[in-house]
Length: 257
Image 1 (cartoon, helix red, strand yellow):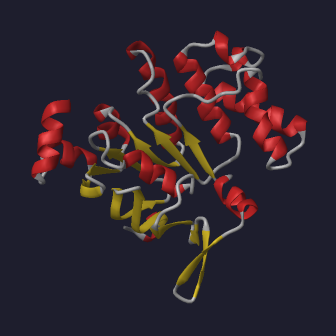
Image 2 (cartoon, rainbow, N blue to C red):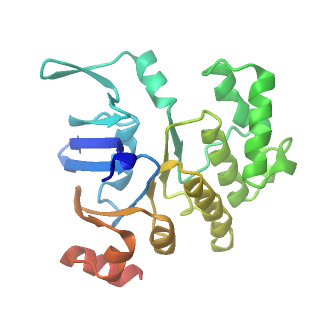
């Protein structure tokens, strides 16, 4: 990693269990500033849980995530971690955009209202400033004409692009994508991936849980393969996809490529 590519996101020995099921088993990772890191693996391997630990939607049982040098959700005193108060965690979370499988748009709000709500309420931006930025974002994702539409009138691909614009409206340091195309009809996948390619080209730091191997190969700077709560293999996406070294990665890719 070069000086120009210092780690923006670091994970340290992250463990997470749900009852007796240990979902994450001491995960370590780094993502460079401005890089796109793609996370692949079978269902149940811990990918989505890891993503949710990054923005403290799930609280790790041990270990921690740091973003831009600041531990998310905790303060370190001596050798112990103490959970931060909710308002402090909310402030940290505002720096992390997240796009889910389902779009989670407010159905009773227009597209413009969906995008401007958080910047106005949480970031305390004026309505006029929030609206101006929202129109810029809608133009970037190719939906300028949909500002006054309601989510129910949009296609799945359009709703997901609005969800991306809504996350970007907070001007985050990091964008997380949790299988953003998995709920879409096949013909709508491309328009969402094109939007994500645009963000990558603009230098947005992104962690993407995906089954779109073509996107990972083309856009990703690093690829991490997860299995059974651990990162089994990582490297350049083109090298890992063409010549995986770990037998578990080989078995998985033989079924999806």
